[in-house]
Image (tube, rainbow, N blue to C red):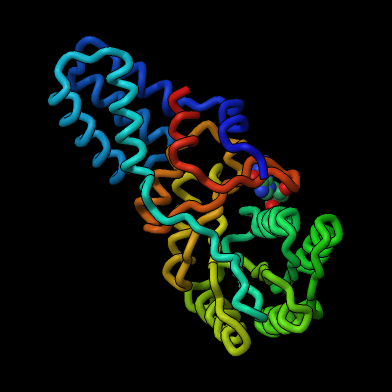
Amino acid sequence: MVRLRARLARSQNTLGKGLLDLLSRDRLDDDTWDEIEETLITADVGIAPTQAMVQDLRTQVKVLGSRTPDEVRALLRKELLIQIGADLDRTLHVQPHGERPAVVLVVGVNGTGKTTTTGKLARSLVGDGRSVVLGAADTFRAAAADQLQTWGDRVGAEVVRGPEGGDPASVAFDAVAKGTADKADVVIVDTAGRLHTKTGLMDELGKVKRVIEKKATVDEVLLVLDATTGQNGMRQAQVFAEVVDVTGIALTKLDGTAKGGIIISVQRELGVPVKLVGLGEGPDDLAPFDPEVFVDALLG
Ligand code: GDP
């Protein structure tokens, strides 16, 4: 996995610098607070979290009185860490249970980076000496299973696939069965992200989960969210979070946006910790999310 800091430092980030500049002004009048609010919203922080943050910052600044650049930085750093939920548990649950593999379900809208994230996660686990089985439960698109197969071949993970148009739950079941028979450490199931109707989605994902649970425990449900889709993507992600118990977010394409505020939005509006971030298309472009490193990169 890549080093988060080095990679983020390279992506130009407007949020941290913009806020630092504004908060360092001699006079913080209403116009400046409006600008601060605008900066946060433009950086995809979302309306409600922005308002909470501005209120907090206003109070803190009042308490502080005069401000040196270091004090402003420290204040903003602290506030961002609070908003990001610095002390949330971000453990990725990938520990096998004795002879049974850990099971990770990867869900989210098509195109967000589910298959790529599945491949990268497998790569990192294999790199740590674990054996991994991948389940191609997106049976609706022929290319999806081929794409996962390519990742499997590339990173050294077995891929279980079914017939095109087959039952996703049955592929998920077979993948878990294969993982159990082979005494694999982790099974990662890549699902279809068709957002047709909420009930349809619920039925589909619910069935996949129930069927897996006949054989194993689902340890982690990773919701993949594309950072470049901003608030629109957030709304779609919310639908997934409503139909399945999401345990972690993988925020992809963070390399493609300068709007780091989406991290705050995700955390506050979905109530689920970001556990992984995608920083490119390559096999090693995945990093565990570390709030401190992220905030320090934002503030430069
Ligand atoms: P899926 O339909 O959700 O399975 O999405 P894919 O895994 O096929 O990804 C869709 C596109 O996004 C592909 O072109 C990926 O290479 C690209 N992608 C996925 N993750 C990242 C990332 O973190 N950064 C960048 N720049 N591209 C990504």
